[in-house]
Length: 193
Image (cartoon, rainbow, N blue to C red):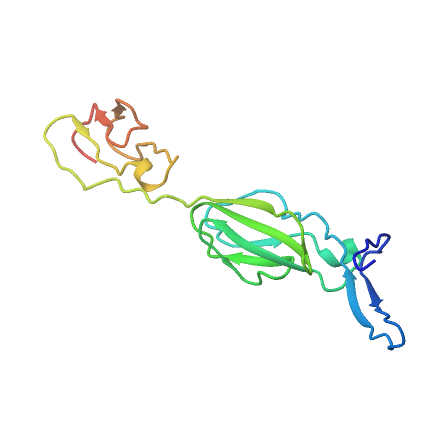
């Protein structure tokens, strides 16, 4: 039969099949087809989601290595940026550095490939917090005993950031209306430093 099904091919095996057509006294003119049975790659594992310490913008990625786990040569991997900003140093190696991570969330995808056989991708979420810069506003001179402070709004610096006013010096203890508000009022001020 010109079309037939062959089963039992082992992974990473190379098979050659010859097709002959005979016609009476004419010699057969064979043709050979090569079938390469690739091994399905391991499930990709990009590692665990990570929250970086403040000020850190680099991380070493450690995806699972396709070679030793699958016992095949020629397997490749690839890291891709799905969301956020970053620079992947060696996107075609299982273990690589990712630099210049932007603030917030960066999502990376990792997959393993053996020829045309590709694993389902696995993703890792990297969260980078940036220390927001506080701005307490301009210095003020006044005659009264209260002042509305004018710090920068933490939410405008970075989503989820919070602020708090604390007194570090002065001739009396100030009483804040709400010391976690950027525009809190400090009451009970006295003359002097």
